[in-house]
Length: 291
Image (cartoon, rainbow, N blue to C red; front, side, top):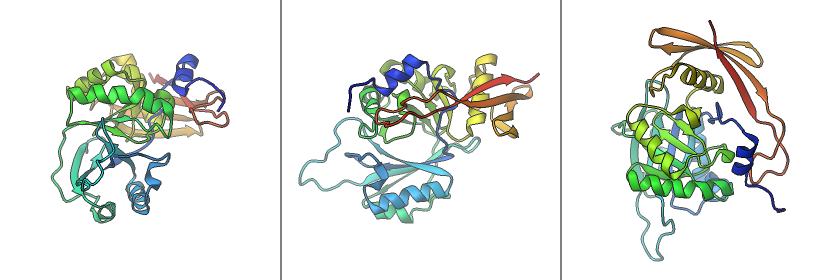
């Protein structure tokens, strides 16, 4: 490779907007795998590939998770049972089911709709640290995961690729599926504390994975203009597509509802990841609250 900027540094220099960039996923399937992780994490075994397809089949996404810190088991040590979780991030259904497994093939028989386990609303914090996919995720993500684990050891996990490497460090707050960009060790702890208190912080919020990108853009506009920061505020009531690049999004509001017009476009082409071989455009949105 010729020397060039890390993608997260370049994105900050360009002023890339993280708004409405959370990759879709109404449900999240978390699979503990201590690592190491390959570039494409779920191609490590045929069972994991099928697990990812199962998640996609229920409108979700699968990620590998591991505890921050050491990831390589000691030689001769028997493999411990690992954990899995299904998280429903859809508005009004937010909860998490946990289970355990010894062999990845067991995950192919776990009921997913819903699992046979008691759900919990206890939060889960994911920090993307998959350095083999993008260096920025490891460089920026691991200090964030470490700081967050110190404050919330049971809730914090490193995770595999979630998209938007140029916004590293990326933090996912589950079960709502709120994705934050450019998180630092200090801000991560503050974001987690706010989330536990039912408050979201729009400044670095990429969006909510369980709603479409036009809805993410509409929610961001309403939060920043009206100061509505409750995690469960501004749920979508309906979306009307006006043309290929424009939408009217109806959102729940304390006084009833409001409508936000969202117009989509594309950025100038650029190298968007550390591994990018050619320039690409990214989706951008403009939004305004309708009278």
